[in-house]
Length: 131
Length: 380
Image (cartoon, rainbow over all chains, first blue to last red; front, side):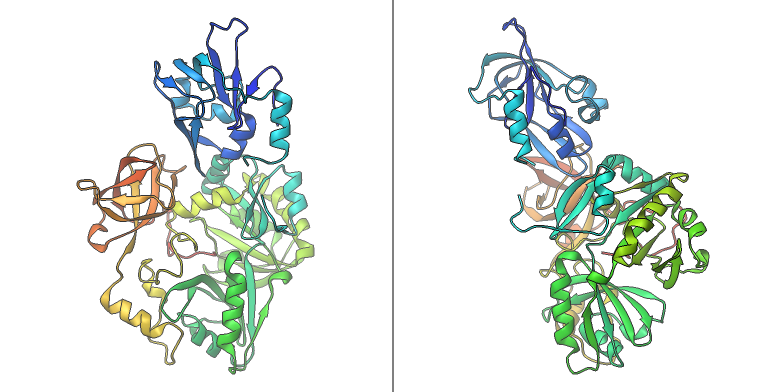
């Protein structure tokens, strides 16, 4: 299962690409591990542009044929862009979770202390947690 | 995480080699999907899928009193099943509650094969043993004698025919025949749980891996792919087929589920549940099973409340629901009060705190082209 280095990860199986220039928005998506556990995604409900996110709180949902999962905000901040392509092609989350299947761009106001690096997230998923 | 090690089917190594994602289901480690739920679902509707159903429970009932014992134990008419034929039936408790739904194959005058859902197989074996006591019939747990492979879809017959000694077109729906496939002995049944044409192969566990491989290779030219339990669930839901633990349970009778036809009051002798079922058949069930079609993209799921769209009053509960891969909109089954069960009735479902509109629809949601088979027939 692909877990790229250089990204940050939440225990809710989301990834964050945080720009070096910290004033630029971060990109948020779900991990390949989560996409695989969900099965084929058929519908994504994302927060509106301008919405305020609070880390740890539900901000949308991801629905597959088999199940539905809450999308949990991995950081606190404001949504500045969302991946509108997912409305018509939600399968991008399965086929390309770290690139074309991104969900949101968020201007971060607060990073939670418990985000993981790739190595720690690998350890988390190896133990089967969250599956 | 599992605390008890799940059983593995004789095909476990084949699933691993195919890259399956596994799930623990009824104490078994089963393939959930291979390539993907949607691709597998569509393959069964348009070509064919190969399922490992070895978790299903097989119970043999043999002896001069076998027919009599099953007539007593089940709501259906076992003695009326012709040799070589099969029937969809149920085993009920004394209060009429559904303990399991079953397919009963009559293999010989004095030999039946009862196929139960994996989770219920131990209970069904115990109940059949108790109910057959003193009736010159032996009840044998035969689950370890069989692996079960299903070939389902419009290309199922074309896949099997070149490998099979039997005359496939002559095998009727809900019939079975002892034959060979690729030289291996097989009990071949024309049954399924997908809403498509298809066959189920009861085979010796040692023969299962080679047969699986032969069928995959033979079917590839027809578009057959290995298919997991995830698509099996959306396929059966589209076909309006009930699943024990969802639509069927000890809390409902066959009449609640719209399957009162499986209860045969014309049997001469008493059977377990007769008095209670007779009462329900007269008074009518308090809730009835309906199909629902969703108008938003959010799908109702098991356990969600069904509501009156005007007052918000609870009218029932969703038993199964999913976005339909074939139809492109959410579908669900639910128990609702009988006066809200007419097709076309507009209801609402509380989907995680938001009320979404749904409309009562006829079952099944999907019927295969040129279908002439009973829509509710199933293999568990």
